[in-house]
Length: 252
Image (cartoon, rainbow, N blue to C red):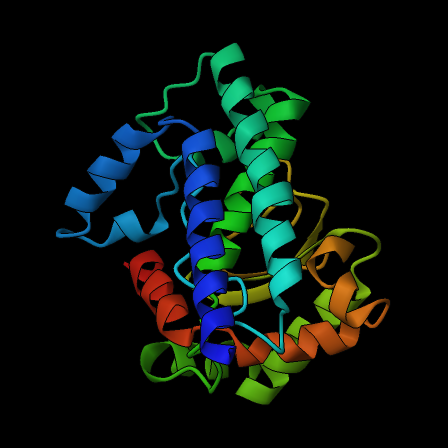
């Protein structure tokens, strides 16, 4: 019976993911194609985001018990899918060149509408969020990233404390971030709503390496009002390998 339930869950996940992907259309396929080619070069493609919702690389239940299946399903197929769909409409309305990555739009977001800011930010933030989590996550960073964290924060534990404080004290809805700045130093901060450190209107700037969603819809079903418990659980699913790849690409 347990095996049958897993099989059904897998089929449901694949069906929902396919529907969500198709619903987004093919906006941004040019940039996705060019990213694939660029990945063979300087690795900057790792930091380039397309305009369509990317299928999850894992089942909705894969991050349980840290993030439960129902939260993941609703978060991905409803909230994130809505940002991607609304972004598509804003792109068409404002005639954006989607052969360039979404990062280019965000870095000049003051030139665009509120709809572009909210939905472009929402889409980018969630695409990053899904990509840095894994059922095989957890542990600690290694290599150059570990060295950079020690250099910037004093120690890994000090970094964790600062990041958790940023996530727990963000008033209302928003995100906590680990970024690398133009000076190649790491920094921790937070942003409101769907803003992010790439935006030219942001007081806290840098290239995001880690982004943690602290909107209530990201955790309320499982953690209710206990945001600190959700924040602490995040380390169990954070994929440091992916974060290290982003760090390496942004460091060059």
